[in-house]
Amino acid sequence: MASILSICLLFITVCTAGGFRENVVSRCVFTSPDPKDIEYIYSAYYNKKEYIRFNSTVGKFVGYTEFGVKNAERWNSGPELSNRRAEKERYCDHNVPIWYSTPLITTVEPTVRLHSTTPPAGHHPAMLVCRVYDFYPKQIRVSWTRDGREVTSGVTTTEEMEDGDWFYQAHSDLEYTPRSGEKISCVVEHASLKQPLVVDWEPSMPESERNQIAIGASGLILGLILSLAGFIYYKRKARGRILVPTN
Ligand SMILES: *[C@@H]1O[C@H](CO)[C@@H](O)[C@H](O)[C@H]1NC(C)=O
Image (tube, rainbow, N blue to C red; front, side, top):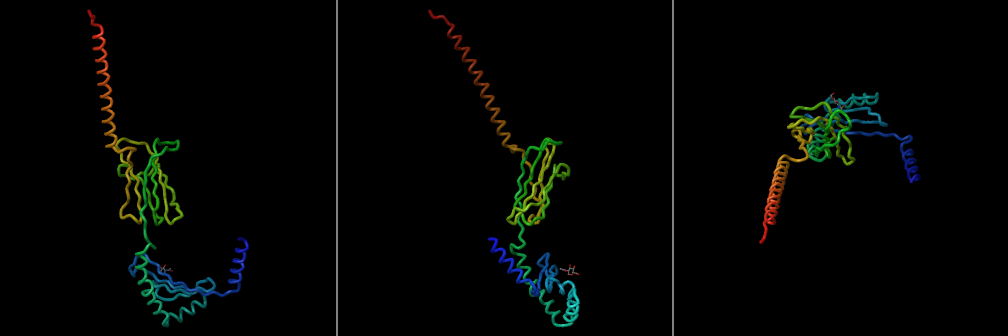
């Protein structure tokens, strides 16, 4: 393994030592598929140093070295200028709408889960965790609301973390003191969402479920009382019957 590596290193050294390198990069920089939001950049480098650039927004060549400045002068008054201007249309304006509609710039909606946990020993008796994961791109905002108003204290939010598979995750904690009847929500804003995603905190059980359990428990207690009453009544009757003398 080590020998393969050293051969490679030797090869790279031989290739670059004393070599001369000219390279040219054409770029399309865009914020939308609209031609007016597209910039075409053509840069020429010699031994890694950029010496001339055509920027479609500027509309002409600009030189950065003596050689580059001379070339820019010549190219700006020759056919190279109209060639580069046409290149914006041919290369960028044509391709950007295609790139725009592909997974290159796809956004992926986050999955959001809320759960309660034990708060660290501190000021508040309760803590909620909002886990936001599997989203793309990285930029995201996670916040909390209490009865519709944003909460600022007791909130700790992590940086976006890479999952290692192009997706990101972020977590936010809210430490708080519960009040009865309040509504707490985790709010997520992300490029993939047309409007903020609001996830409401549901105390461990939904209300309907709690009602059902209350009804069931009342029924059970009523049944126990009635059977106890019946049992006592039966015992009394039985004792009375035994006491009757038989002649
Ligand atoms: C191109 O030129 C415009 C206008 O001067 C400038 O705002 C933009 O940053 C330039 N783009 C690049 C990649 O240099």
